[in-house]
Image (cartoon, rainbow, N blue to C red; front, top):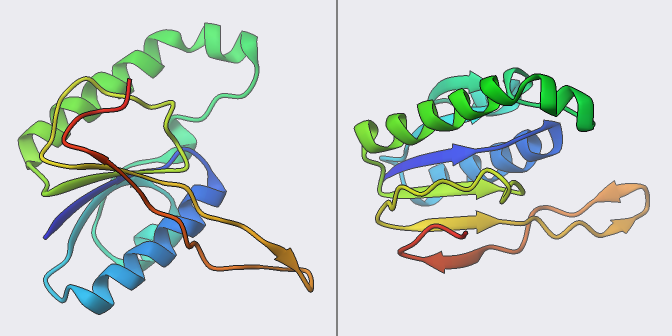
Length: 134
């Protein structure tokens, strides 16, 4: 299957890299394309953009970079349509909603349980259905 993953920051990169490894274990033909970071790149696939190129914190930085944010969203929509993945996975990043409708869209929220100073592996996957969450 072809998987398109979108993350918005470092923890999403970590969780998505675990998810990608798990998907590779059950789907040997898994093909990944993603907006992500270095951990996802290490797993394999094609990184379209690094999340650091898209992340802005605070009201003023977001306002100052609105044009870039909308340009990135438009580019992402176009890239998804052109690459035609079997599923799009938004990792802990539902704010990056898009109005193009792929075959399936999944929002992946990892369940993090703190215990013994360690984090549990991601365990929750919510199937949204054949539409984008809006």
